[in-house]
Amino acid sequence: MLVQGLLFVLLFQLFGELIVVSLGLSVPGPVLGMVMLLLLLLNRKQVPQSLRQVAEALLANLALLFVPAGVGLVLHFELLRTEWWIILLALVVSSLGAAVITATLFSLLIKRQRRSVGRDNG
Image 1 (cartoon, one colour):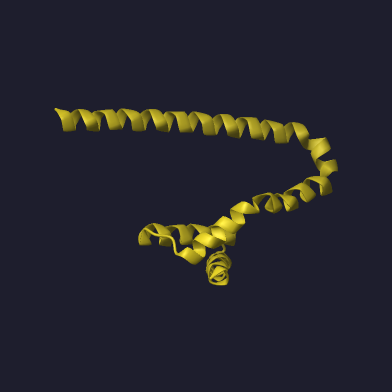
Image 2 (cartoon, one colour):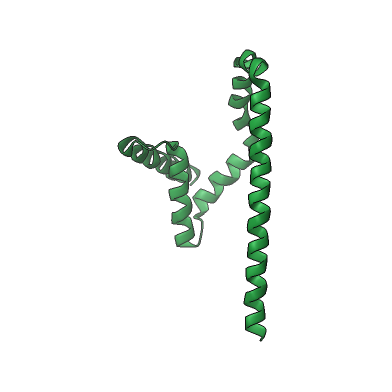
């Protein structure tokens, strides 16, 4: 059953890769594949047991998935040493931007919810 779920995940990654290559998109194929899988699961409103087992196994071993990123840091250490300031600036600006956008969106949604509740009670 675990093999069936893993095959399901890999097929969606393959479909995403095929779409990206055929349309020349600038999105990673596996990301597009996982978005398609998410849409399918949202449409079905349930997760098959085989897929649930694969997700649990991947989450249990999530730390192993960071090994390639760590190796990349070691491999490109010299570049990071010379360009650290621009990387730091990009991280700070993008983090602040994400925080501002999240806070603004949250505020707008709260106001919208209060108006909706006010209409329902009034």
